[in-house]
Image (cartoon, rainbow over all chains, first blue to last red; front, top):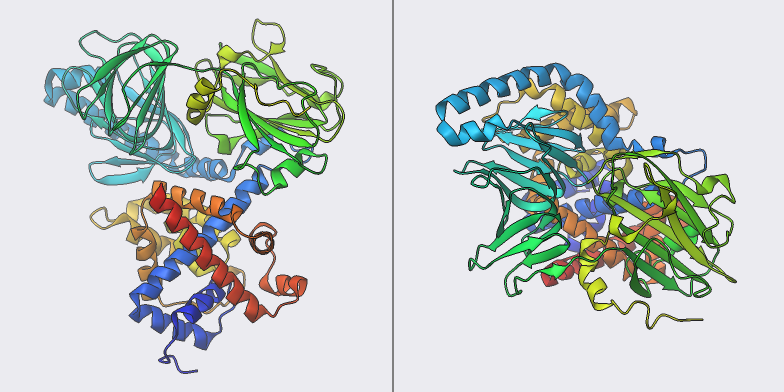
Length: 463
Length: 155
Protein backbone atom coordinates (compact mmCIF):
# COMPACT_ATOMS: atom_id res chain seq x y z
CA UNK A 1 0.00 0.00 0.00
CA UNK A 2 1.37 3.37 -0.97
CA UNK A 3 1.62 5.78 2.02
CA UNK A 4 1.17 8.72 -0.34
CA UNK A 5 -2.13 7.38 -1.66
CA UNK A 6 -5.03 9.80 -1.14
CA UNK A 7 -7.56 8.90 1.55
CA UNK A 8 -11.16 10.07 1.44
CA UNK A 9 -12.42 11.78 4.64
CA UNK A 10 -14.97 8.99 5.32
CA UNK A 11 -12.27 6.36 4.98
CA UNK A 12 -9.99 8.40 7.22
CA UNK A 13 -12.65 8.39 9.95
CA UNK A 14 -13.06 4.61 9.74
CA UNK A 15 -9.31 4.10 9.68
CA UNK A 16 -8.95 6.35 12.72
CA UNK A 17 -11.49 4.24 14.57
CA UNK A 18 -9.53 1.13 13.63
CA UNK A 19 -6.31 2.82 14.75
CA UNK A 20 -7.87 3.64 18.12
CA UNK A 21 -8.77 -0.01 18.51
CA UNK A 22 -5.34 -1.30 17.53
CA UNK A 23 -6.71 -2.81 14.33
CA UNK A 24 -4.77 -0.83 11.76
CA UNK A 25 -1.76 -2.52 10.14
CA UNK A 26 1.64 -0.91 9.80
CA UNK A 27 1.22 0.25 6.22
CA UNK A 28 -2.26 1.66 6.76
CA UNK A 29 -1.04 3.45 9.89
CA UNK A 30 1.73 5.03 7.83
CA UNK A 31 -0.85 6.09 5.23
CA UNK A 32 -3.18 7.60 7.77
CA UNK A 33 -0.25 9.24 9.53
CA UNK A 34 0.73 10.97 6.31
CA UNK A 35 -2.86 11.97 5.63
CA UNK A 36 -3.30 13.49 9.09
CA UNK A 37 0.02 15.27 8.89
CA UNK A 38 -1.12 17.11 5.77
CA UNK A 39 -4.81 17.53 6.47
CA UNK A 40 -6.01 19.80 9.28
CA UNK A 41 -9.71 18.95 8.95
CA UNK A 42 -8.97 15.23 9.29
CA UNK A 43 -6.80 15.95 12.35
CA UNK A 44 -9.73 17.83 13.82
CA UNK A 45 -12.06 14.92 13.03
CA UNK A 46 -9.54 12.53 14.60
CA UNK A 47 -9.48 14.67 17.75
CA UNK A 48 -13.29 14.57 17.98
CA UNK A 49 -13.33 10.82 17.53
CA UNK A 50 -10.58 10.28 20.09
CA UNK A 51 -12.39 12.39 22.65
CA UNK A 52 -15.76 10.78 21.92
CA UNK A 53 -14.35 7.27 22.41
CA UNK A 54 -12.90 8.36 25.72
CA UNK A 55 -16.12 10.00 26.83
CA UNK A 56 -18.17 6.93 25.94
CA UNK A 57 -15.83 4.81 28.08
CA UNK A 58 -16.16 7.30 30.94
CA UNK A 59 -19.96 7.34 30.65
CA UNK A 60 -19.96 3.54 30.72
CA UNK A 61 -17.68 3.51 33.74
CA UNK A 62 -19.86 6.01 35.58
CA UNK A 63 -22.93 3.88 34.81
CA UNK A 64 -21.15 0.80 36.10
CA UNK A 65 -20.13 2.55 39.30
CA UNK A 66 -23.69 3.63 39.94
CA UNK A 67 -25.04 0.12 39.34
CA UNK A 68 -25.90 -1.82 42.49
CA UNK A 69 -22.94 -3.70 43.88
CA UNK A 70 -22.83 -7.00 45.71
CA UNK A 71 -23.77 -7.14 49.33
CA UNK A 72 -20.26 -7.81 50.56
CA UNK A 73 -19.00 -4.59 49.02
CA UNK A 74 -19.14 -2.21 51.95
CA UNK A 75 -19.69 1.51 51.71
CA UNK A 76 -16.22 2.11 53.05
CA UNK A 77 -14.66 0.07 50.27
CA UNK A 78 -16.76 1.67 47.57
CA UNK A 79 -15.91 5.15 48.72
CA UNK A 80 -12.27 4.71 47.73
CA UNK A 81 -12.44 5.59 44.08
CA UNK A 82 -9.47 5.46 41.78
CA UNK A 83 -8.82 9.18 42.09
CA UNK A 84 -8.50 8.79 45.82
CA UNK A 85 -6.18 5.84 45.46
CA UNK A 86 -4.05 7.89 43.09
CA UNK A 87 -4.07 10.78 45.53
CA UNK A 88 -3.00 8.61 48.41
CA UNK A 89 -0.08 7.47 46.34
CA UNK A 90 0.61 11.08 45.37
CA UNK A 91 0.57 12.05 49.01
CA UNK A 92 3.25 9.48 49.82
CA UNK A 93 5.47 10.87 47.11
CA UNK A 94 4.65 14.47 47.79
CA UNK A 95 4.87 14.56 51.55
CA UNK A 96 8.50 15.78 51.78
CA UNK A 97 7.70 18.39 49.16
CA UNK A 98 4.64 19.61 51.07
CA UNK A 99 6.83 20.35 54.06
CA UNK A 100 9.23 22.24 51.85
CA UNK A 101 6.53 24.06 49.92
CA UNK A 102 4.62 24.77 53.13
CA UNK A 103 7.76 26.34 54.62
CA UNK A 104 8.41 28.33 51.50
CA UNK A 105 4.82 29.52 51.33
CA UNK A 106 4.87 30.53 54.96
CA UNK A 107 8.07 32.47 54.40
CA UNK A 108 6.57 34.10 51.30
CA UNK A 109 3.46 35.01 53.26
CA UNK A 110 5.51 36.60 56.04
CA UNK A 111 7.49 38.63 53.52
CA UNK A 112 4.28 39.62 51.74
CA UNK A 113 2.77 40.82 55.00
CA UNK A 114 5.84 42.88 55.80
CA UNK A 115 6.00 44.32 52.35
CA UNK A 116 2.45 45.07 51.42
CA UNK A 117 0.90 47.03 54.23
CA UNK A 118 -2.23 46.95 56.27
CA UNK A 119 -4.64 45.10 53.96
CA UNK A 120 -2.36 42.21 53.32
CA UNK A 121 -1.59 42.07 57.02
CA UNK A 122 -5.30 41.69 57.70
CA UNK A 123 -5.75 39.16 54.89
CA UNK A 124 -2.95 36.89 55.93
CA UNK A 125 -3.32 37.28 59.67
CA UNK A 126 -6.47 35.20 59.19
CA UNK A 127 -4.28 32.48 57.65
CA UNK A 128 -5.93 30.72 54.74
CA UNK A 129 -5.34 27.03 54.29
CA UNK A 130 -6.71 24.71 51.69
CA UNK A 131 -7.79 21.46 53.32
CA UNK A 132 -9.74 18.29 52.61
CA UNK A 133 -8.71 18.08 48.99
CA UNK A 134 -10.50 15.38 47.01
CA UNK A 135 -9.69 14.73 43.37
CA UNK A 136 -7.33 16.86 41.31
CA UNK A 137 -6.98 20.54 42.22
CA UNK A 138 -4.31 22.56 40.41
CA UNK A 139 -2.71 25.51 42.20
CA UNK A 140 -1.33 28.28 40.01
CA UNK A 141 1.07 30.54 41.90
CA UNK A 142 3.31 33.06 40.19
CA UNK A 143 2.73 31.29 36.86
CA UNK A 144 3.83 27.95 38.30
CA UNK A 145 1.27 25.19 38.48
CA UNK A 146 1.17 22.03 40.51
CA UNK A 147 -1.45 19.56 41.69
CA UNK A 148 -2.32 19.78 45.38
CA UNK A 149 -2.02 16.64 47.39
CA UNK A 150 -2.54 17.86 50.94
CA UNK A 151 -3.04 20.92 53.09
CA UNK A 152 -1.25 24.06 52.05
CA UNK A 153 -1.20 27.73 53.08
CA UNK A 154 -2.68 30.03 50.45
CA UNK A 155 -1.71 33.56 49.52
CA UNK A 156 -3.16 36.48 47.56
CA UNK A 157 -2.99 35.94 43.80
CA UNK A 158 -3.22 32.14 44.07
CA UNK A 159 -5.48 30.53 41.48
CA UNK A 160 -7.17 27.15 41.96
CA UNK A 161 -8.67 25.00 39.22
CA UNK A 162 -10.80 22.04 40.25
CA UNK A 163 -10.90 19.18 37.79
CA UNK A 164 -14.16 17.38 37.24
CA UNK A 165 -15.36 15.71 40.48
CA UNK A 166 -12.80 17.49 42.69
CA UNK A 167 -13.60 19.42 45.87
CA UNK A 168 -11.66 21.18 48.65
CA UNK A 169 -12.18 23.64 51.49
CA UNK A 170 -10.46 26.92 52.25
CA UNK A 171 -10.32 27.36 56.00
CA UNK A 172 -9.61 30.60 57.81
CA UNK A 173 -7.37 30.15 60.81
CA UNK A 174 -9.34 32.71 62.82
CA UNK A 175 -12.92 31.84 63.61
CA UNK A 176 -14.71 28.91 62.08
CA UNK A 177 -14.96 30.15 58.53
CA UNK A 178 -14.84 27.46 55.87
CA UNK A 179 -15.47 27.87 52.17
CA UNK A 180 -15.93 24.61 50.29
CA UNK A 181 -15.57 24.57 46.50
CA UNK A 182 -16.60 21.95 43.94
CA UNK A 183 -18.25 21.46 40.51
CA UNK A 184 -15.19 22.27 38.41
CA UNK A 185 -14.65 25.47 40.40
CA UNK A 186 -12.14 27.99 39.17
CA UNK A 187 -11.15 30.76 41.56
CA UNK A 188 -8.54 33.33 42.43
CA UNK A 189 -7.71 34.92 45.77
CA UNK A 190 -7.80 38.62 44.92
CA UNK A 191 -5.90 41.37 46.64
CA UNK A 192 -8.32 44.21 47.34
CA UNK A 193 -8.58 46.75 50.09
CA UNK A 194 -10.98 46.49 53.03
CA UNK A 195 -11.61 42.80 53.09
CA UNK A 196 -10.88 39.38 51.68
CA UNK A 197 -11.94 38.78 48.12
CA UNK A 198 -12.31 35.62 46.11
CA UNK A 199 -13.03 35.73 42.41
CA UNK A 200 -15.13 32.68 41.57
CA UNK A 201 -15.20 32.34 37.79
CA UNK A 202 -17.32 29.24 38.00
CA UNK A 203 -18.29 26.41 40.32
CA UNK A 204 -20.11 25.83 43.58
CA UNK A 205 -19.17 27.45 46.88
CA UNK A 206 -20.66 26.27 50.17
CA UNK A 207 -19.74 28.83 52.83
CA UNK A 208 -19.91 28.85 56.61
CA UNK A 209 -18.62 32.26 57.61
CA UNK A 210 -18.07 33.39 61.18
CA UNK A 211 -18.64 37.04 62.02
CA UNK A 212 -16.33 39.38 60.07
CA UNK A 213 -15.46 43.02 60.89
CA UNK A 214 -18.25 45.23 59.48
CA UNK A 215 -15.79 47.18 57.34
CA UNK A 216 -14.05 44.04 56.11
CA UNK A 217 -16.56 41.54 54.73
CA UNK A 218 -15.60 38.54 52.66
CA UNK A 219 -16.34 39.40 49.05
CA UNK A 220 -17.08 36.78 46.44
CA UNK A 221 -16.85 38.15 42.90
CA UNK A 222 -18.45 36.16 40.08
CA UNK A 223 -18.88 36.94 36.37
CA UNK A 224 -22.29 38.51 37.17
CA UNK A 225 -22.27 39.64 40.75
CA UNK A 226 -20.53 40.47 43.98
CA UNK A 227 -21.63 38.89 47.26
CA UNK A 228 -20.60 40.53 50.53
CA UNK A 229 -20.59 38.22 53.52
CA UNK A 230 -20.26 39.35 57.13
CA UNK A 231 -21.22 36.15 58.91
CA UNK A 232 -23.61 33.57 57.55
CA UNK A 233 -24.16 30.20 55.91
CA UNK A 234 -24.81 30.14 52.21
CA UNK A 235 -24.22 28.44 48.87
CA UNK A 236 -23.24 30.29 45.77
CA UNK A 237 -23.14 28.78 42.31
CA UNK A 238 -21.61 30.61 39.36
CA UNK A 239 -21.24 29.84 35.69
CA UNK A 240 -21.04 32.04 32.63
CA UNK A 241 -24.80 32.60 32.55
CA UNK A 242 -25.82 33.27 36.13
CA UNK A 243 -24.90 33.52 39.77
CA UNK A 244 -27.24 31.88 42.23
CA UNK A 245 -27.06 32.62 45.94
CA UNK A 246 -28.91 30.62 48.63
CA UNK A 247 -28.78 31.77 52.23
CA UNK A 248 -29.41 29.33 55.07
CA UNK A 249 -28.55 31.60 57.95
CA UNK A 250 -27.77 35.30 58.42
CA UNK A 251 -27.72 37.70 55.48
CA UNK A 252 -25.68 38.19 52.33
CA UNK A 253 -25.64 41.37 50.26
CA UNK A 254 -25.73 40.59 46.53
CA UNK A 255 -24.94 43.21 43.89
CA UNK A 256 -25.38 42.61 40.17
CA UNK A 257 -22.30 44.11 38.51
CA UNK A 258 -23.88 44.91 35.13
CA UNK A 259 -26.26 47.56 36.52
CA UNK A 260 -25.39 47.86 40.22
CA UNK A 261 -28.82 46.55 41.24
CA UNK A 262 -28.57 44.96 44.66
CA UNK A 263 -30.51 43.01 47.25
CA UNK A 264 -29.93 41.64 50.73
CA UNK A 265 -30.74 37.94 50.76
CA UNK A 266 -31.85 36.69 54.17
CA UNK A 267 -32.13 33.28 55.80
CA UNK A 268 -34.37 30.92 53.83
CA UNK A 269 -34.14 32.93 50.60
CA UNK A 270 -32.33 32.72 47.30
CA UNK A 271 -31.64 35.15 44.44
CA UNK A 272 -30.25 34.82 40.94
CA UNK A 273 -28.08 37.45 39.27
CA UNK A 274 -28.20 37.14 35.49
CA UNK A 275 -28.88 39.34 32.52
CA UNK A 276 -32.59 39.86 31.86
CA UNK A 277 -33.71 38.23 35.13
CA UNK A 278 -35.17 40.38 37.94
CA UNK A 279 -32.88 40.46 40.95
CA UNK A 280 -35.40 39.56 43.64
CA UNK A 281 -35.39 37.39 46.75
CA UNK A 282 -37.43 34.19 46.62
CA UNK A 283 -38.18 31.66 49.31
CA UNK A 284 -35.84 28.69 49.39
CA UNK A 285 -37.66 25.39 48.96
CA UNK A 286 -36.78 22.42 51.11
CA UNK A 287 -37.44 18.81 50.39
CA UNK A 288 -36.60 16.04 47.95
CA UNK A 289 -36.87 15.98 44.17
CA UNK A 290 -38.90 12.91 43.20
CA UNK A 291 -38.70 11.69 39.60
CA UNK A 292 -40.68 8.69 38.38
CA UNK A 293 -40.77 6.45 35.34
CA UNK A 294 -44.13 4.80 34.64
CA UNK A 295 -44.59 1.63 32.59
CA UNK A 296 -41.37 0.00 33.75
CA UNK A 297 -40.90 -3.75 33.42
CA UNK A 298 -38.92 -5.92 35.82
CA UNK A 299 -38.74 -6.00 39.59
CA UNK A 300 -35.27 -4.92 40.65
CA UNK A 301 -33.79 -1.47 41.12
CA UNK A 302 -31.29 -2.42 38.41
CA UNK A 303 -34.18 -2.50 35.93
CA UNK A 304 -34.69 1.20 36.61
CA UNK A 305 -31.09 2.19 35.96
CA UNK A 306 -30.95 -0.02 32.86
CA UNK A 307 -34.02 1.64 31.33
CA UNK A 308 -32.96 3.89 28.43
CA UNK A 309 -35.18 6.71 29.79
CA UNK A 310 -33.20 6.75 33.03
CA UNK A 311 -31.96 9.10 34.37
CA UNK A 312 -32.78 11.98 32.00
CA UNK A 313 -36.31 11.31 30.78
CA UNK A 314 -38.65 10.68 33.71
CA UNK A 315 -42.37 10.45 33.04
CA UNK A 316 -42.82 13.20 35.60
CA UNK A 317 -41.37 14.89 38.66
CA UNK A 318 -42.53 16.50 41.84
CA UNK A 319 -41.13 17.33 45.22
CA UNK A 320 -41.54 15.64 48.56
CA UNK A 321 -41.68 17.77 51.70
CA UNK A 322 -39.87 15.02 53.65
CA UNK A 323 -38.02 11.87 52.59
CA UNK A 324 -41.15 9.80 52.01
CA UNK A 325 -42.94 9.10 48.71
CA UNK A 326 -46.70 8.53 48.31
CA UNK A 327 -48.00 5.11 49.43
CA UNK A 328 -50.02 2.82 47.11
CA UNK A 329 -49.59 5.27 44.29
CA UNK A 330 -49.17 3.11 41.14
CA UNK A 331 -47.90 -0.17 39.68
CA UNK A 332 -44.98 -0.90 37.37
CA UNK A 333 -42.94 2.20 38.02
CA UNK A 334 -39.51 3.23 39.20
CA UNK A 335 -38.52 6.39 41.01
CA UNK A 336 -35.51 8.37 42.12
CA UNK A 337 -35.72 10.72 45.10
CA UNK A 338 -32.70 12.95 45.60
CA UNK A 339 -31.58 16.03 47.49
CA UNK A 340 -28.71 17.64 49.30
CA UNK A 341 -28.61 16.63 52.92
CA UNK A 342 -27.54 19.21 55.49
CA UNK A 343 -26.83 17.55 58.89
CA UNK A 344 -27.80 19.59 61.95
CA UNK A 345 -24.76 18.48 63.97
CA UNK A 346 -21.43 16.77 63.50
CA UNK A 347 -21.52 13.13 64.53
CA UNK A 348 -22.42 9.59 63.55
CA UNK A 349 -25.65 9.11 61.61
CA UNK A 350 -27.43 5.84 60.85
CA UNK A 351 -29.85 5.56 57.93
CA UNK A 352 -32.75 3.19 57.19
CA UNK A 353 -34.78 2.59 54.06
CA UNK A 354 -38.21 0.94 53.81
CA UNK A 355 -39.88 0.21 50.47
CA UNK A 356 -42.21 -1.95 48.47
CA UNK A 357 -41.01 -3.71 46.25
CA UNK A 358 -37.32 -2.81 46.43
CA UNK A 359 -35.12 0.24 46.99
CA UNK A 360 -31.59 1.43 47.62
CA UNK A 361 -30.18 4.41 49.46
CA UNK A 362 -27.04 6.12 48.15
CA UNK A 363 -25.01 8.78 49.93
CA UNK A 364 -22.05 10.81 48.74
CA UNK A 365 -19.21 11.79 51.11
CA UNK A 366 -19.60 15.30 49.69
CA UNK A 367 -21.96 17.40 47.60
CA UNK A 368 -20.94 15.66 44.40
CA UNK A 369 -23.47 13.08 43.18
CA UNK A 370 -20.75 11.24 41.24
CA UNK A 371 -19.13 10.14 44.51
CA UNK A 372 -22.22 8.47 45.95
CA UNK A 373 -22.08 4.94 47.37
CA UNK A 374 -24.87 2.55 48.30
CA UNK A 375 -25.29 2.47 52.09
CA UNK A 376 -28.44 0.39 52.67
CA UNK A 377 -31.15 -1.30 50.67
CA UNK A 378 -34.03 -3.72 50.60
CA UNK A 379 -34.54 -6.35 47.93
CA UNK A 380 -37.82 -7.58 49.40
CA UNK A 381 -40.91 -5.53 50.12
CA UNK A 382 -41.59 -3.96 53.50
CA UNK A 383 -44.65 -2.23 54.93
CA UNK A 384 -44.62 1.59 55.03
CA UNK A 385 -41.96 2.70 57.57
CA UNK A 386 -41.14 -0.89 58.50
CA UNK A 387 -37.45 -0.22 59.15
CA UNK A 388 -36.19 -3.46 60.68
CA UNK A 389 -37.55 -6.29 58.53
CA UNK A 390 -34.14 -7.04 56.96
CA UNK A 391 -30.66 -6.19 58.27
CA UNK A 392 -29.65 -4.59 54.95
CA UNK A 393 -32.23 -1.86 55.47
CA UNK A 394 -29.94 -0.24 58.06
CA UNK A 395 -26.64 1.48 57.22
CA UNK A 396 -23.48 1.43 59.28
CA UNK A 397 -22.97 4.58 61.37
CA UNK A 398 -21.58 7.31 59.09
CA UNK A 399 -19.84 10.42 60.41
CA UNK A 400 -21.26 13.59 58.85
CA UNK A 401 -20.24 17.17 59.51
CA UNK A 402 -22.63 19.97 60.42
CA UNK A 403 -23.28 22.57 57.76
CA UNK A 404 -21.81 20.48 55.00
CA UNK A 405 -23.83 19.38 52.01
CA UNK A 406 -24.07 15.68 51.15
CA UNK A 407 -25.77 14.35 48.06
CA UNK A 408 -28.37 11.68 48.93
CA UNK A 409 -30.42 9.55 46.55
CA UNK A 410 -33.00 6.78 46.96
CA UNK A 411 -33.87 4.51 44.04
CA UNK A 412 -37.19 2.76 44.17
CA UNK A 413 -38.79 -0.01 42.13
CA UNK A 414 -42.42 -1.14 42.19
CA UNK A 415 -43.84 -4.06 40.17
CA UNK A 416 -47.38 -4.67 41.42
CA UNK A 417 -49.55 -4.53 44.55
CA UNK A 418 -48.86 -2.03 47.31
CA UNK A 419 -45.98 0.42 47.08
CA UNK A 420 -44.09 2.74 49.40
CA UNK A 421 -40.73 4.40 49.97
CA UNK A 422 -39.35 6.17 53.02
CA UNK A 423 -35.91 7.05 54.37
CA UNK A 424 -35.16 7.60 58.05
CA UNK A 425 -32.11 8.56 60.04
CA UNK A 426 -30.90 8.61 63.61
CA UNK A 427 -29.05 11.88 64.13
CA UNK A 428 -26.90 12.53 67.24
CA UNK A 429 -29.12 13.22 70.28
CA UNK A 430 -32.30 12.62 68.29
CA UNK A 431 -34.73 9.74 67.92
CA UNK A 432 -35.07 7.85 64.65
CA UNK A 433 -37.24 9.89 62.28
CA UNK A 434 -38.03 10.28 58.60
CA UNK A 435 -35.46 12.79 57.35
CA UNK A 436 -37.30 16.10 57.68
CA UNK A 437 -37.56 18.82 55.07
CA UNK A 438 -35.49 21.36 56.96
CA UNK A 439 -32.40 19.15 56.56
CA UNK A 440 -32.98 18.62 52.85
CA UNK A 441 -32.19 21.09 50.10
CA UNK A 442 -33.58 20.49 46.66
CA UNK A 443 -30.98 20.22 43.90
CA UNK A 444 -30.64 23.86 42.78
CA UNK A 445 -32.11 23.48 39.30
CA UNK A 446 -35.35 22.29 40.82
CA UNK A 447 -36.06 25.30 43.00
CA UNK A 448 -38.30 26.89 40.41
CA UNK A 449 -40.11 23.61 39.84
CA UNK A 450 -40.74 23.27 43.54
CA UNK A 451 -42.09 26.77 43.77
CA UNK A 452 -44.41 26.27 40.82
CA UNK A 453 -45.65 22.92 42.01
CA UNK A 454 -46.46 23.93 45.53
CA UNK A 455 -49.87 22.34 44.97
CA UNK A 456 -48.01 19.03 45.20
CA UNK A 457 -48.96 15.94 43.26
CA UNK A 458 -52.27 17.38 42.26
CA UNK A 459 -52.18 15.65 38.87
CA UNK A 460 -50.38 12.55 39.97
CA UNK A 461 -52.93 9.93 40.78
CA UNK A 462 -52.56 6.92 38.51
CA UNK A 463 -54.50 4.67 40.89
CA UNK B 1 -6.72 16.72 27.64
CA UNK B 2 -3.93 14.49 28.74
CA UNK B 3 -6.09 11.38 28.98
CA UNK B 4 -7.00 11.65 25.29
CA UNK B 5 -3.33 11.80 24.42
CA UNK B 6 -2.68 8.69 26.51
CA UNK B 7 -5.49 6.89 24.70
CA UNK B 8 -4.06 7.80 21.31
CA UNK B 9 -1.00 5.75 22.30
CA UNK B 10 -2.37 2.86 24.36
CA UNK B 11 -5.31 2.47 21.92
CA UNK B 12 -7.84 1.25 24.45
CA UNK B 13 -10.11 3.49 26.50
CA UNK B 14 -10.03 1.18 29.50
CA UNK B 15 -6.26 0.75 29.52
CA UNK B 16 -6.07 4.53 29.05
CA UNK B 17 -7.74 5.04 32.42
CA UNK B 18 -5.12 2.97 34.29
CA UNK B 19 -2.23 4.43 32.36
CA UNK B 20 -3.48 7.95 32.98
CA UNK B 21 -3.43 7.26 36.72
CA UNK B 22 0.24 6.23 36.43
CA UNK B 23 0.98 9.31 34.34
CA UNK B 24 -0.44 11.58 37.05
CA UNK B 25 1.81 9.94 39.59
CA UNK B 26 4.84 10.25 37.33
CA UNK B 27 4.15 13.94 36.74
CA UNK B 28 4.37 14.65 40.45
CA UNK B 29 7.49 12.51 40.82
CA UNK B 30 9.28 14.34 38.03
CA UNK B 31 8.03 17.80 38.93
CA UNK B 32 11.57 18.98 39.80
CA UNK B 33 12.63 18.32 36.24
CA UNK B 34 9.89 20.49 34.73
CA UNK B 35 11.26 23.70 33.27
CA UNK B 36 8.56 26.14 34.35
CA UNK B 37 9.33 28.51 31.49
CA UNK B 38 7.96 25.89 29.09
CA UNK B 39 4.28 25.01 28.54
CA UNK B 40 3.04 22.49 31.07
CA UNK B 41 0.89 20.56 28.58
CA UNK B 42 3.79 19.82 26.23
CA UNK B 43 5.96 18.58 29.09
CA UNK B 44 3.11 16.52 30.54
CA UNK B 45 2.53 14.85 27.18
CA UNK B 46 6.23 13.92 27.08
CA UNK B 47 5.86 12.21 30.45
CA UNK B 48 2.63 10.55 29.31
CA UNK B 49 4.26 9.24 26.15
CA UNK B 50 7.10 7.62 28.10
CA UNK B 51 4.74 5.97 30.58
CA UNK B 52 2.31 4.80 27.89
CA UNK B 53 5.03 3.32 25.67
CA UNK B 54 6.58 1.55 28.67
CA UNK B 55 3.19 0.04 29.48
CA UNK B 56 2.75 -1.18 25.93
CA UNK B 57 6.19 -2.81 26.06
CA UNK B 58 5.38 -4.46 29.38
CA UNK B 59 2.21 -5.92 27.90
CA UNK B 60 4.20 -7.29 24.96
CA UNK B 61 2.03 -5.39 22.53
CA UNK B 62 3.44 -3.80 19.43
CA UNK B 63 0.69 -1.69 17.91
CA UNK B 64 1.47 0.50 14.93
CA UNK B 65 1.48 4.06 16.17
CA UNK B 66 1.38 7.48 14.60
CA UNK B 67 4.55 9.51 14.66
CA UNK B 68 5.19 11.77 17.61
CA UNK B 69 4.52 14.79 15.42
CA UNK B 70 1.04 13.61 14.42
CA UNK B 71 0.18 12.51 17.97
CA UNK B 72 1.17 15.99 19.17
CA UNK B 73 -0.87 17.74 16.52
CA UNK B 74 -3.98 15.69 17.36
CA UNK B 75 -3.45 16.48 21.05
CA UNK B 76 -3.31 20.18 20.18
CA UNK B 77 -6.61 19.85 18.33
CA UNK B 78 -8.15 18.26 21.43
CA UNK B 79 -6.82 21.15 23.54
CA UNK B 80 -8.53 23.60 21.21
CA UNK B 81 -11.89 22.03 22.00
CA UNK B 82 -11.82 23.84 25.35
CA UNK B 83 -10.99 23.50 29.00
CA UNK B 84 -12.08 20.81 31.43
CA UNK B 85 -15.47 22.41 31.92
CA UNK B 86 -16.15 22.62 28.17
CA UNK B 87 -15.19 18.98 27.80
CA UNK B 88 -17.53 18.05 30.67
CA UNK B 89 -20.36 19.84 28.86
CA UNK B 90 -19.48 17.93 25.72
CA UNK B 91 -19.56 14.63 27.60
CA UNK B 92 -22.93 15.46 29.14
CA UNK B 93 -24.32 16.34 25.71
CA UNK B 94 -22.97 13.06 24.36
CA UNK B 95 -24.73 11.14 27.13
CA UNK B 96 -28.02 12.77 26.21
CA UNK B 97 -27.44 12.21 22.51
CA UNK B 98 -26.98 8.49 23.16
CA UNK B 99 -30.53 8.44 24.45
CA UNK B 100 -31.76 9.74 21.10
CA UNK B 101 -30.24 6.91 19.07
CA UNK B 102 -32.39 4.11 17.74
CA UNK B 103 -32.67 1.06 20.00
CA UNK B 104 -30.49 -0.94 17.59
CA UNK B 105 -27.69 1.62 17.51
CA UNK B 106 -27.83 2.18 21.23
CA UNK B 107 -27.48 -1.56 21.73
CA UNK B 108 -24.41 -1.57 19.49
CA UNK B 109 -22.75 1.20 21.48
CA UNK B 110 -23.65 -0.62 24.67
CA UNK B 111 -21.92 -3.75 23.50
CA UNK B 112 -18.74 -1.94 22.62
CA UNK B 113 -18.40 0.59 25.43
CA UNK B 114 -20.51 -0.70 28.30
CA UNK B 115 -19.90 -4.42 27.89
CA UNK B 116 -16.36 -3.79 26.59
CA UNK B 117 -16.73 -6.30 23.76
CA UNK B 118 -14.24 -6.32 20.89
CA UNK B 119 -15.34 -5.63 17.32
CA UNK B 120 -14.74 -9.31 16.57
CA UNK B 121 -17.14 -10.38 19.32
CA UNK B 122 -19.78 -7.89 18.22
CA UNK B 123 -19.44 -8.98 14.62
CA UNK B 124 -20.33 -12.54 15.68
CA UNK B 125 -23.25 -11.32 17.76
CA UNK B 126 -24.80 -9.18 15.04
CA UNK B 127 -23.68 -11.34 12.09
CA UNK B 128 -21.82 -8.56 10.33
CA UNK B 129 -18.30 -8.44 8.99
CA UNK B 130 -15.78 -6.60 11.18
CA UNK B 131 -15.02 -4.15 8.37
CA UNK B 132 -18.70 -3.30 7.97
CA UNK B 133 -18.95 -2.85 11.71
CA UNK B 134 -16.15 -0.28 11.73
CA UNK B 135 -17.95 1.65 8.99
CA UNK B 136 -21.17 1.46 10.99
CA UNK B 137 -19.51 2.67 14.19
CA UNK B 138 -17.76 5.40 12.30
CA UNK B 139 -21.15 6.67 11.08
CA UNK B 140 -22.56 6.34 14.57
CA UNK B 141 -19.76 8.49 15.93
CA UNK B 142 -20.38 11.00 13.18
CA UNK B 143 -24.11 11.19 14.03
CA UNK B 144 -23.31 11.59 17.72
CA UNK B 145 -20.82 14.33 16.97
CA UNK B 146 -23.45 16.27 15.02
CA UNK B 147 -25.94 15.84 17.82
CA UNK B 148 -23.39 17.05 20.40
CA UNK B 149 -22.48 20.08 18.31
CA UNK B 150 -26.15 20.98 17.88
CA UNK B 151 -26.77 20.61 21.61
CA UNK B 152 -23.78 22.78 22.49
CA UNK B 153 -24.84 25.47 20.04
CA UNK B 154 -28.38 25.61 21.42
CA UNK B 155 -27.23 25.62 25.08
